[in-house]
Image (cartoon, rainbow, N blue to C red):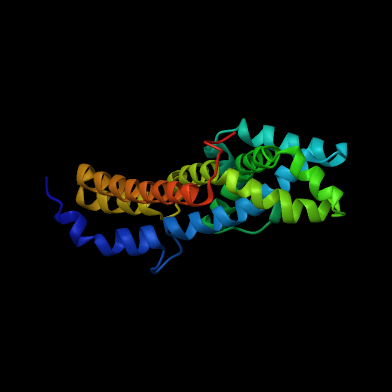
Length: 229
């Protein structure tokens, strides 16, 4: 084994492939962080829609969740890669296609986590808030969501870890993330074992760090919810 190939290409692998700084748009974190933030925001609306009393809100939200939870992520990426440019009539960079696919796909899972988190809040809390004169919107904002968020932390972090690892699928449309950067180097150096072992270690460090942070946050906040819905 010769890990010199990793050392000599470390800048390209980590700065370009992982962080996303370089001559062209790429990067695992550059894709994962916006996808997590935007997917969670959309997931909140999807989760609230799943709990809505109005059928015209609840039924589309449920259909959205069932559609994307029952579809492989790689298929969603291909849909966006081939269909979006046709619908918009403009070519789209790999970054925006991948970001749109991840946000839309992950929002279905995050929406279910939000729904489960809200439903985990005891009804007595809602009744007490209503008795004090709070409106439904105020009760949701000040009473339900803060408690639900604490309950959701383990499941949310688990899904964020899955999303981080799944960003490697964006390489199939040419997006230069850490996995694609390793492929590019390997095509030149022919050192697959060393390169793919290295990126496996990088992913493991990231996911393990996120897991440890989640556990510490759970202990601090006293979150009872143990996993994804």
